[in-house]
Image (cartoon, rainbow, N blue to C red):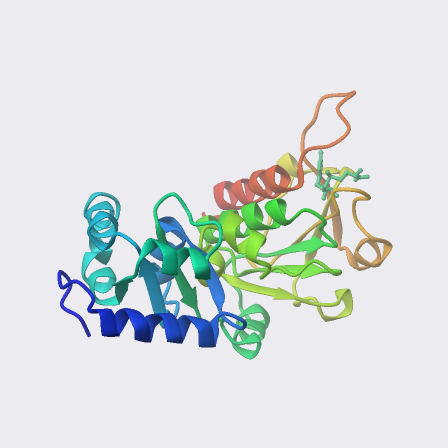
Length: 259
Ligand SMILES: C[S@@+](CC[C@H](N)C(=O)[O-])C[C@H]1O[C@@H](n2cnc3c(N)ncnc32)[C@H](O)[C@@H]1O
């Protein structure tokens, strides 16, 4: 390993680019300093991290994440701007990119199924918008939710979702599942026609389901729901954005849960 302050040699730059090329098709792209920071903090395995300005990234670490100054120093390899652009067409303004190993589906499914559960699982029922999915994963990580499950065709590990999640896919269990395979636990399905959430306590083992941006909850999720729950909204407003609905619901769980 390099010393934290040692510049990479041309040989290590060549080796790092080779590692990148070998992993790029299967690994998770961490785009920018904040994604790399979060992934490191939450234990992601990161075989390669590249920058065209190592000193600038380490300086950023001093300012924003001094806890990561050492690991970043050991990990970051400096390559030419040209070499970086050849690997990452749209470089993040912080000038750093890394590849992380995607956590195993088996481990994530175990985490989602484990009982007793100390924090809810969030289910996005056939979400359509990649940015919303990323924002929800970031929220779930922030609130310490057990995981985020999507149903339908959207890939919750799509690069745009990972970008929206700011590297926080590694802080919670993120998987796609069929409705029939959703984790156990009382299912609270969020819908504007439901019972007012302010009168309810959301238990830690809850499964919190949110409908698609276009059509709301599917018939399958409605059929499985133990409770249909609404967020307060004044008349004439038809619905909230998906990610903001998740935020309000997780906040309600966090504020009303602990005694
Ligand atoms: C953009 S909304 C979907 C609107 C959709 N046209 C519909 O018919 O429900 C996405 C999801 O956010 C949640 N949501 C939005 N506003 C809500 C509210 N006032 N109460 C409960 N859930 C809400 C629901 O889970 C909803 O399915």
